Image (cartoon, rainbow, N blue to C red; front, side, top):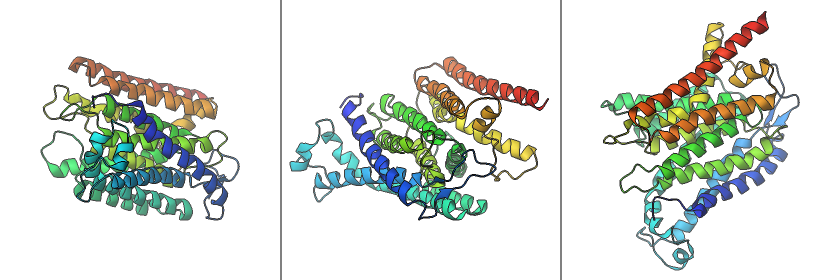
Length: 383
């Protein structure tokens, strides 16, 4: 297989999770009230009618079922020793897939470790949706799961720092930041899921078309995982489009945020001996808008003397609505901001050092312009 990725691989990753999540969404919508998963309108809510939650279950089911089916095919195509064979099942697979059966088999423990940790995050979010957990419990479990993945599974940021404890701590914070950034974005119809689709698609594009690993091959394991996630989120978004019939809830935002964080740790964006080490900043470019939302919200809450863990309507999307935008236009503005920042990441692999600095400065300038416009407009409104 060359460095190009067959369209059949992309469609094969997207379609199963999309179909399963779409169908599961109807089931969740029907039974969510019986399960106590209904989001009631309130002072910090933008919806006006009670809406079923639990869309995260549909997303999770789409991802898990797709990989369970793939695992069954892999088992059927493998010998007892675990080496991929070209027997009856193997001969039924596309030509491009057969050389990768052994590699897929070797990645099985890592895959199910990732899915197990993501499932733990999903159930934490589901418990929060159902019971309303205290922030200390939520953060405690998030840090616990993240630490287990980093220090026992060996998932680390590529930071070129010799201290393993420092890179480990940074990796734990990285995972928790992803989880909470998508949780904070889940405040308008289609917002968190749409941003996740943009981010995951950009990550997948980088890992599949700008290979860094030895041999120059696309990173099919992480890239494929991201495409399956994109498909499942797409299936859910059909139910979450305005006016939303189903919310993803914390179960969905926790699962999505963790999955994306894990993918950035497992994927290789640059290497120690690369002539473009600044490609390590690619994930930050993609996540610039979600991180801007999270950091600005926390700053506003602390500045106003409120708890940083207290929910409110001070998010990026809420602020855009306060400036006169419709909710739909606010969501699209966040989408476009995410894409504008993320597209720069696709160029880091090809840019010189000067070019990379310009890309990063453009992203900083874009977010700075948004912050200036926001603050100026808010002062004008107060007058």
